[in-house]
Image (cartoon, rainbow, N blue to C red; front, side):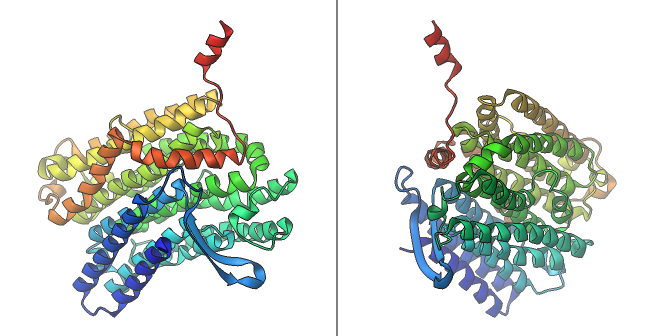
Length: 501
């Protein structure tokens, strides 16, 4: 079965169907139903995936622009599969959470939910593309629905945030387009197929220039410090549901691109620029955490925590060890669930009070204990508390980095301490202490909101104690990717000691 085309096709047809529905409530229900169908189909596909089988599975390849060697070509390895699953799990949760988000916007409710399904198709497509040109098309096309979701349904400064997001992304995309064209021309293969292009660029200087074209685009998308400045504005102004998809999925395209394209297409350049990327990653970890501590706006604080987290992911990618690479991939998934929960619960709180400022809250725990309790769990997952899924990811990244780069790993560890400060201090100021007059009558989470939060909390707990199902899929794919660099894991110190004896 053409599983990947079916997933995208159902989402696109669903988006068209939503526009034909005349009743807003029915449009929401229809969107939720379509997203659940896509989720069920994705699970059915994932069950048939063989971790130790072919590198790319569920492959499809059709001529698109034969004169240029462009194909509609899709397929997934373990890395792409888990990110597609992340996307299709988050979309129905976001749809349910966004039940009333579009009602204050300038455009119709049907348009908002239609854009959400279009975005879902784009997210599946970008992770599934095995043709570099097709990947670029999806990479750019994702901007359109997100631009309108922020610009038409966001906060007071939504136009500024949407335009800034678009300009930054278009600039990065333009650099990548130049690199894609140069890669096609220099390789001389007459094709954009990713497997055919791996290993074709032998000249190191050429690799360096092409690497930079791809890497800067991915660093902006991620975003990695110092390319991050668009994210706090976009996340703060976007509706909570759109912010979840922006930070939880779209930004992962950047780190996914680093792992998939930068390492495999330009292995020598990747090794050459590794010190630079690791330096940027460590700065991002510390900088994002410190700036988060000083934020007064709840959504901007969460956005800056993501800058810090993306530093960990990029660090894991360029440490080029199996543990770090697998940890970085797992981090992409777990960060989507963790930050998704944090953004959505913060969104519920902001809807009730009408303010994003932390100082306008206090003592919420006494009037809305369920909201406060779920907010605490989501916050603890963001600071990587043992027992929650993000701890496994962060631990693997730090251990894998330590195997090769002791000092960067040691500095990055301070991000864990800083995370405890910004999360617990935000929780203390909003949920503990005397109950502020303006929140004394805040309602607790209703049934719909509990259905939104419950799956995310469950996933954080399940993968915190049992990450094996994900790691069984991720590990072989990461090893395969690193073999293209090539990169080998350092020999364990214990083994060296025994040999010395």
